[in-house]
Image 1: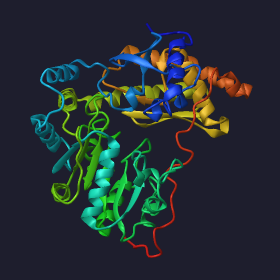
Image 2: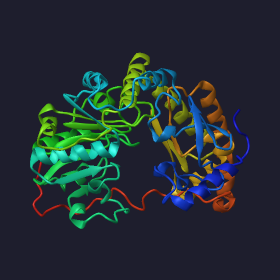
Image 3: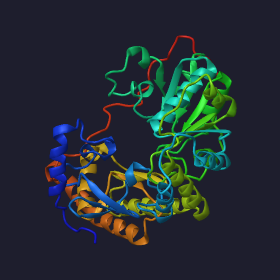
Image 4: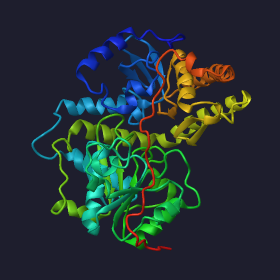
Length: 445
């Protein structure tokens, strides 16, 4: 069953050394790569999963709280979804004409998502984010974009981060960023040149003082389109996503994680008059947009979510972990050092720099959680099949690990207690508020 010692990762490391000879970098998804786990303790490769558990190449079993960085919402190898994939596989994967599942899924989305007057289907989150920006520019006749959060690897967005080599300066100048829950940081840059404002409705922080409503009002007054990036909020915080949860209908919205239980698919939803530009004026097509296995998985996943009220179940499981962690931290006089926060469906554990380097503190806890059979990256991305036994095991692990963190802090040299290379930051900087696009800023009330 669950490992109670630091795992033997000999085979993982052998695969890693092979990868280093031909892959640069070795991972296709940064959040899954060795820089996000204690390199020397954590496994690097997994071979299978079932429900909320995964097994690495060395045969070690873990309770998983990353869940493929979000897409696995029901659980690994979930029977209803896998059966839908198998049934479709018998008939084929990708065809020379359109498939009826494209219509079936779009009708389902039209019924569930508040703003889905129209639907576009693609493969990845970055694709639909870029498509939303492109069609916004076409609809408004404007060039510039304001963003808040993470929106993928394409030029228009990644130029705002520290990993912006290869992006022309002319492209970088067209995108600005603003701070979450700081409406003035948006107002200061909202000029007549801004085509759209794109943001994650929340990451972990709750919106304050009607922040989202204020953004919508500013966009409407300025003639800019509002785009919700619902990669994380969609189908998790509510079946209809943040739109349903907050009662706000953006002009456009994008989705990818969660609604196909791990299959690669993405959605762009929005106003009919905007999306109709894709018919002739704006080009957004791909060979695999109508790939039928993912369509079948999406339909089955959404139907299961609706029938079993999965969003409520995710919230209940996540709340138990969040409250339990915070109670254990308080019991160990660690409330000023570490807390679990966020919306119940997806929470994050943070560490205060006053007690040491947060990444070192996180790495120490991660190391000890992995020893106790939990694949832990500082998040609780709960899935529908996390069981009571899984939650109990996790809380018991926190009962054991947090006192060890107290001892490590008291000794004053936590890094020396790590058995491998600590976790690294993904970006050196991200979301920095740039200077206003022009001297003439609209004074939108």
